[in-house]
Length: 322
Image (cartoon, rainbow, N blue to C red; front, side, top):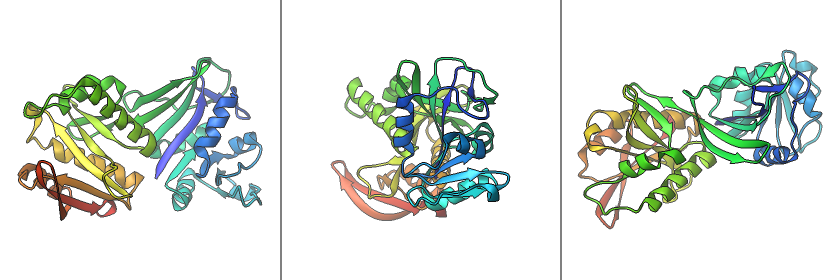
């Protein structure tokens, strides 16, 4: 399940005073409504009271030390629950949907932090007075992938940076065009115009924004040097509910086990986001190294297809079984 923290945060990190938030923008509220509509939202008691009621079109899960004291909704369009912990709230949300939003306050964000898969932050260009703060966002752990300036504030989306034994996996973003183009180029293939690479990179950003996961830029952790791209993402060519495994490393970084590391990281991410889905890799039958990677991570050959370059072998598995 995607677990998304959504918040309005001032320059000094303040989100409220324990009773209300310092900034209220009509455009932000409209976006909050559109973004959370149809999904469960998790709120603490004080945040629930500040909202002033249960929001229609969403299931509200109130976290309280004394959940029996929470008066629940009797509106069928605004169902509600009260539970004693964030962990219980997340379990309940997962039984209802594959996306949920954590909406505060400060302690709820703190308790949910280790479970978050992304951040949806309205960054206000002002400081504020207040005792409640949003948790500190460490740039070593989170990448700002998308920013939409709106004048007094920006809508932003951040995604986690993943680390394996030897690699730092960073969601590929707009600033990575040169590395993306270099790693996607090959001496045995026709030269690709830079604009085509730009389109491919922008499409990858959309995968992150729409699906919560896309390809990473893989860096050697020791030297912080980009050596490959890859991971898992949805593919228009695949049946609904399936994800594609892909990776490409520069020639000097091949045959070092990096492909297995990035594949296992992608599988681990999918087990959180979409464990019941199918993962597939489409490989050349004569690519022994790629077939060995697929086998090592638990995929099995399940079919054949082809393209203009020749036959292809399809390897698949249900993510939860890997």
